[in-house]
Image (cartoon, rainbow, N blue to C red):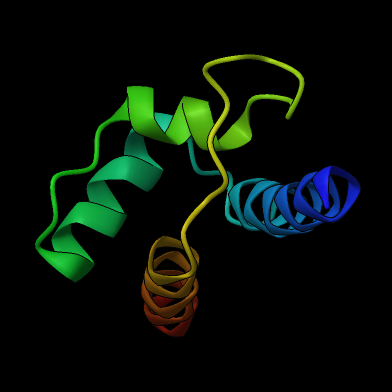
Length: 81
C-alpha cells in the first residue's frame, strides 16, 4: 500500500514538474495560476509540499483538482502565444 502511494505521488509530481518546465513557470506562479483557476487558497509553500520527495515529512500528494487546474490554465497560456 505504501509503495502504491509513493508511486502515485511520484507520477503526479512528475507531471506537475513537466508542466512547470514546459511553460517555464515558477512554483509561486503555479500557485497563483491554480488559485486563480480554482478560487482556492494555494500558495508557493503548498506547491513546494506537492513537489517534495515522498520521503520528506512535509511532502503532500498533489491533488487532482490542482493538477487539472494547472493543465487548464497552461493550455490557455499556450493559446495566447
